[in-house]
Amino acid sequence: MTRSKLLMLIVLLGTALAVVAQGPGILQPQMKLAADAGTYDAPMGKLGDKPAAPWSGTDRKSVV
Image (tube, rainbow, N blue to C red; front, top):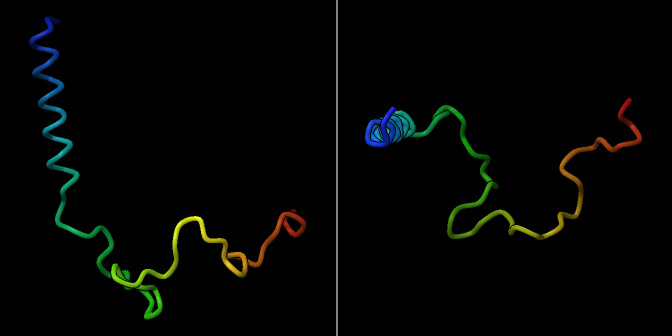
């Protein structure tokens, strides 16, 4: 395969992936955020902040 054909194939595949990735919009539109989930203006939390409680009640001791 020549370089030009390989380059053309890569461009074609990239274009096809971009078209497929756009899709119709939100992937799961039926899923709604909780009322206290926050917004872009007032986010629920910040990255790096340690929560007061773990996100789950499980810990390594209880896992069998």
